[in-house]
Each structure stands twice: as structure tokens, then as C-alpha cells.
Length: 314
Image (cartoon, rainbow, N blue to C red):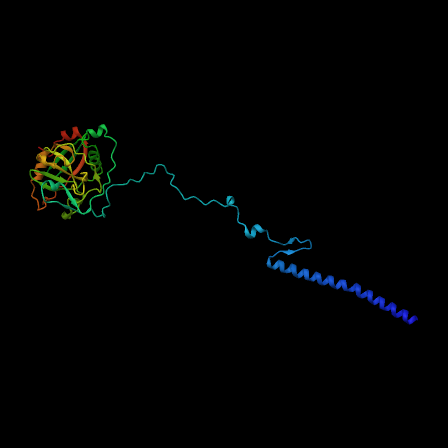
């Protein structure tokens, strides 16, 4: 009986010891598993779950997927601007660049009147030059002086009859447009013609084919009496409005009533008609181009000064 009781007691002690030891091993295993999980989280950057279900070691979502609000983004630096109010404006010239080919114009030869009319295969653009709203008193008191190797010619402009043409002519003279151009067409008892920028160069075949690249509206009022100064133009076939060439002009050395009501007269020679007549009689080629160059220098001067200065004129 004593042996049986001792065996039962031994079995009870062993059972209790096993039950107490098993939870310890299980807790140790769970602790090890949690340690491995947390170690993976530290290496990969992914959040791990704690006992209460909250994220542990998670990165802020704003750093992963969000951009800073537009309001907080640094503003781009604006492009630099010229704040110097004293910088001069850029002037736009109506004169084409020197390397730009002139309009393809050919002189007409069918009649005396046609000599003043340019016959282009490509008419000039009909852009009008900028003109002043009205003439000022100083301009009305000025005259144009054409200095040549044969003497000077003084032209008085008629702004009341041709205000736009006169203003354009003044502008070209002031800009030095006519300087070193020549009288490229001279016809005794008719006219002398000049004002072509092509005539500055040596290629005589292009004389009479150029201009500043624009037309001037027709202002046909005055007649072609002796000393009348008028503008050449394109023919009616391509220029029904009879707009003037921008720069080419002619001076009548005789009265030319056949030209009346067809061309814009904008001034008269008030001194130097003897010079104009002399130029008209110079030796010339088959195209009426003087054999020797007759260059001009054009300036604006007070009328009183121009008339008082006799110069080389008789």
C-alpha cells in the first residue's frame, strides 16, 4: 500500500512540473518570433503591428506620397527686365537692309510720260510711311537744297497741296536718304529725275528701279509748270490709285501739261532752274542715264538762308 501511494505521489509531481514548463517554452517562442518581425521592419521600412494594432515604426505618409502644397513651393525667379527708363527705344526704319534686293522694276520706254512711270513685275508694297498729323511753322519756313557738282537747286514744298508727300520728302532728306544718289534720267526740254537709292552703287543697270520700299498716297492737285517737282510712280495697270513711289522725284525743265492730273506735284524750284537745265543737257546713254555721275546732297535749310546764299549759282 505504501508503494502504491508513493507511485501516485511521484506521478502527480511529474505532471505538475511538465505543465509549468510548457508555457515558459511557448512564451519564449512567441517572444523570438516578435523579435524577428521587428527586425524585418527596421530593415525594410515597412510598419509592423504592435499588440494594440497600431503601426509601430511607420514612416509619415506625407513623406512617402505627398508633395508640398503649391502655396509653399518656392516661386520661380522672374526673367530679368530692363528697368533703365532712360534706354532709348528701338527705331524701325522703313528703308530695307542694304542686302535686300530692290523690287524688280524695269523702265518703260514707250513714251515721255512713261519715263516717269515704273513698270514692275512685282509691285512695291502699298504700305504708307508714317507721317506727322500736320506741319509745324518751322517746317513751312524750310526749303530743300540739292547740292550738285553743277550748282544748287532750291525747292519749296507745298504742304497745303500735298501734305503727306511733303512730310515724306522732308523725312528722307533729314535722314540723308538722298545723299550720294544721282540724277539717273535726264531729258532735254522735259525733266530730270533722281532719288533712287540704287544709284549709290555702280551697277547702272539697276538705276531707276529702286525706292524705300513703300508708296505714298496720291495727292494730285497741282500742275506741271516750269520748275514743278513731282513724284514718279507705278503705272495705272498695277497702281490704279496712282500712289507715288516712295522716293523717286523729277523736276520739269519745261511746262508739261500732258502730265497734269496723273502725278503728284508737291513743290517748285524757286532757285537754280539754270542748274536743272544744265543737268538736262548732259551727255547720256540710251537709257537717258548721264554718262558722268551727277550726285546730290540734300539738306533742309531756312528759306531766307537758302535764297541769300548765292553759292555757285549765277
